[in-house]
Amino acid sequence: MSFEILKQQYGDLTEYVIQETATSNRCVVVPELGGIIRQLSLRKGVTLFSLLKTPATPNALRKDTQSASELLFPFASRIPDGKYKFLGKHYQLPLNNDDNAIHGLVRKNNFTLVEQVVAADHAYLKLSYEIREPEGYPFSVDFTVKYKLSADGIFSLTYEAKNIGTEPCPTMFGWHPYFQLGNELVDAWKINIPSDTIVVFDNRMSPIETAPFPIEGSMPLFKKALDNAFIVKSGGGKAITQLISENQHVTLQIEQETGEGKFNYLVVYTPPSRDCVGIEPLTANVNSFNNGEGLTTLTSGNSVSGTIKINLV
Image (tube, rainbow, N blue to C red; front, side, top):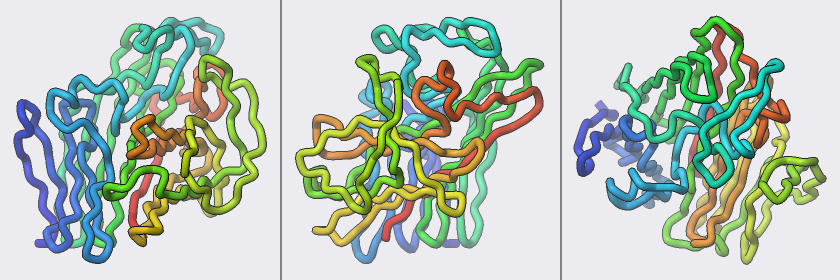
């Protein structure tokens, strides 16, 4: 069979490898550390590209403060002072980033492997985590993520959240990968952002308004620093961000499902190291727990889900 799932040790961590033996396409998942993808490699032609920048050792992965590849739920980005108001009630989240609550409540927690499937043309893992009324978020939600690798060279991430409590709860989801293309630096790349609207932040990186983003097509990243949120343009239920290396004749495509309750926002960030780009699909705007922009109010017994796909062309 062309696909296989392997279980192996990575220092004191246990990880699972989804692999296509014919192409060496693979993704490596660490359930006990927030269910993150530690490695994603996809082939174009004769070259196998390692696409994610993550800390290089198990210990560094545990101590990572940059949220490399982390799953962000039930909120992403910053909530200033950790305070939010939902359905007329005020809540206080623990502060974990200066004077902010940041990146949700599932990161670095131990996920449970609930399903693994190997078929002729694909393989996948499904992981789960139970949120049970933690401090500042007195709601009960079952969160799952499915990682799938297909014979057509597409990697997909599908999340689902189900409210198993009795009261409505606020939710948003984001994924926080840092993408790399070979050993090139960011200055050699171009990016195509599927948006004509940029989010304007205040000095606490919280949205205050929007403005036109008039750049069409590919934008050179040479000497350009980005740490911006965008409202994406949807066409046919999807939006595609392209990271382009003309020198290597390869384009990384990040496709996010769009539409009601889906990934209608995007954050793009160029770290000071200039060797990767954060491209972060979001289901809602930054600080949506307060501004309500894209926020899903999940009623009792109901679920919300969405898919992100990665491939090379």
